[in-house]
Image 1 (cartoon, rainbow, N blue to C red):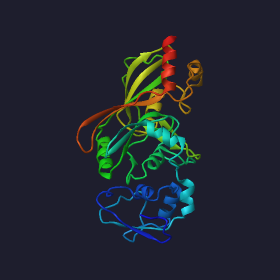
Image 2: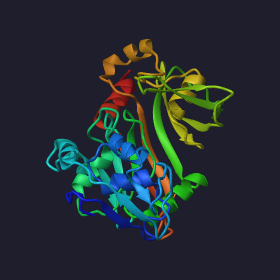
Image 3: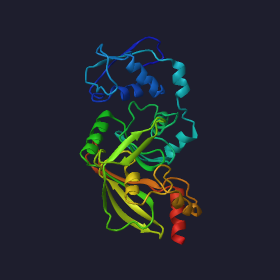
Image 4: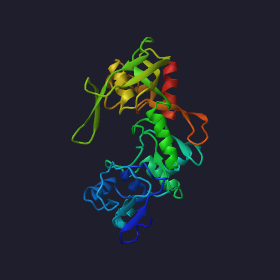
Length: 316
């Protein structure tokens, strides 16, 4: 679809795009257009499906016809991500696996999964700049900005649907490594605590344990002990926002350098190791390939900062 044409565009939906939310579809069609503008044209009724207004959560059906209004080219150019950016080049080195159906990335800490909330750059924007020929690139799941590790991206709508089904049916195994305060008790193998998400006026998300929250479960296993800290493997059974971070805090052992749920005194104790980032890393992901049916286990190595921290703790 050519958005440079100042006139209205009409897009016919095929089976490949069926089941996708209209807001996500528009983000792939209007690359570089701010998310806020996409929601604005939906809210104002400038986008129509089969000549009717739709909400952002409307799911496309095979045969739908979408009316897309003209979008100012200048706004697209301001938001476009140059393939020459250092961050985009770094993403190329972070790719762990890729085929025609999916891409697996070892996401760097400090990089958001998508732009928005004042951020012009995210992993998905970077990958689209890196793979301009790719007709479809969508996140299968998300990682917090400060969390590093395995991130799964679908390259086909059919692959996205199949992988989302695995997530819903809990057929995907995620294993994280977290450095937590104190001596994590060996008998504490499961934390089940309902989580309630609150969005502050600033847009910041804060999650707390609450009886009014959604059921949430994380399994834990001690990997290594360091006296005043413990390296644990955390495997979330559910996929709530900030789940591991809040469950470790609920268990009395917050994660190192967690700016929302952490312990500043614990962070100071770790200062000598050179650590200055959240010690939470998506280390492994096991899932079924959406096309071949093969069971894949992907592992993402720790970055230099986390490796150095552990090496310093072992010396002590």
